[in-house]
Length: 492
Ligand SMILES: *Cc1c(COP(=O)(O)O)cnc(C)c1O
Image 1 (cartoon, rainbow, N blue to C red):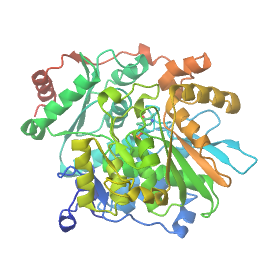
Image 2: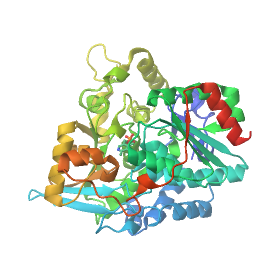
Image 3: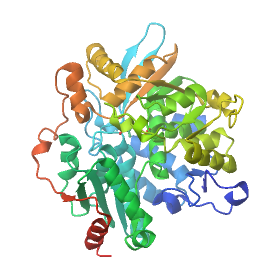
Image 4: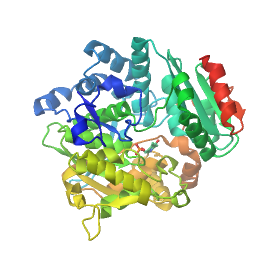
């Protein structure tokens, strides 16, 4: 399996292609595009039938081996077996089996033949769906670095979810260190405790005296010093990482196969969306031949994606137009994985994709509505790819959390509430609608308290997390001090 950049000129695509292991540790392609396979591997009906019975780990192996053709199959099988265990994804709700890794729960079967189902993706160590991919990434990185006798220092900034998922995936891994910046005293007590209670010698928590943007600016400044970056073997694990996307493809297959008994049954997915990483994996599963009916993107007040799927206009937001909401992991101003879908939408034309995303930089967006003066008319093809969308606000979240607690007796988090709200608007007779549960309520307790007047239940082992000893350093937003700290701790 070969990979190309979404911005590669047609003439250059064949010569510049790379294998899975070549792109595993990197981020953007050198031309600024994102990596995709030259063609999506296809699954047959017979394969789907055979896969219905597989464990999650075995299913992950079958799917990954179609993409990671340069990793020996026995090694890949060992990596997926080590990752997808009931010990790692142990935070399942009462009445759900942790061994299923992403258990389904039927919420409602309507008299008119509609069905609403929740698929739990947030039973991993940090209680959010990012663990689904990040745990595999940790094992893949360790494996690949050992083979190359290399090391990697992951450097990033977080306001919560991604940083903790990365730390829990990389803790104790050979050849890897994590330097994670966060805004000092700006994260919730729960999130702070999750990260700072890690005592592993390869995890470095750095609390920056400033806000998230100060931390982010430091990451950019350090990363722009290319000689330093090379010498210190600095890398990232952001949401455009291809292996993360592939790992997420697996749970769409698992959801479809668990919800059906034959491949002519219709299933749609509603996905709480921000950077378009999660739902992009659903798009890829569909392109591989998984019979997904609709892919519904649910956004919060930051509705960049909803606007595109309603109008064909992609308009990124300024930071002054990006709202801090009660589903904060979806507070994005632009969707970093969206280019992967647009590349397919414009017929895999790298020149066209490059021009459109250059226009995002220069003009803040593009317009594919086909109206006079637009940049194209491909919006008319969006339905063919199954995409739909909807939007949810703070009040919707509170109401949905209440409804779901009343009607089904479970407490959902704020992001999942956005998903349920939009899913309900898109139910169709005869079609099972699976909503992806992207976090557990305990992570966003403040809003749960507002909605229900009581605290969200914490999974076992998290009861007193705030009381555990914490390991972190506090630093001013000073780039030279940051570099000195990294170099002192890597010894490179
Ligand atoms: C990251 C995240 C999302 C958004 O996922 P994208 O892949 O960025 O679209 C939604 N919900 C939660 C809880 C998250 O952590």
